[in-house]
Image (tube, rainbow, N blue to C red; front, side, top):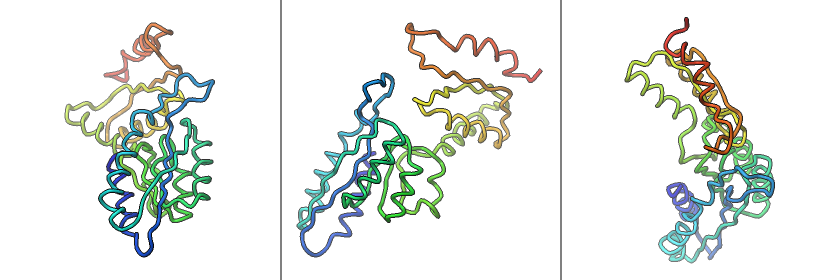
Length: 229
């Protein structure tokens, strides 16, 4: 994430010329929960401190000596795609110079950024679709996409001669692992690793605060994990 901040701010600083200007970056983050949401992990709470530090360093070392300055506007998404899209569109109308973020989702936000030729550097979204630079012309990321992560896992399994597996993952929409799980299964199979069966759990499991879904998943799958028969 720190790399993303500095990259965007450095790009902006290189474009600075002429009279003194103040540049604004839109920061799309999920750091709060809606009143009825008790599960959202709010990753923005643990990583947002980097943007203040990065802006201070860029202003001090790059922009202020040239007579310019940089600030940022926070746009809270609560981890929801609809709000993230709305905030992206709103920031475009506020004369920003680029985006840091968004967090969990980035496809529609990336298209908006490309339509207005504004740089967008996401520090959290892993959706592989945004790797298509013919469409997402201004989008960059500091976290690898799902496909790249999946290929690393496939390489690890090949290293230890694992040729078939049972694959279990959470498809609870609040955690966002469903799409990643589907991508991972597809990459495993295309890499020559047979997924003999797969299982999902769709509840948030907190130890000692709810029914544990894993014993049943293991019981139903362990006999075929190493053999289809």
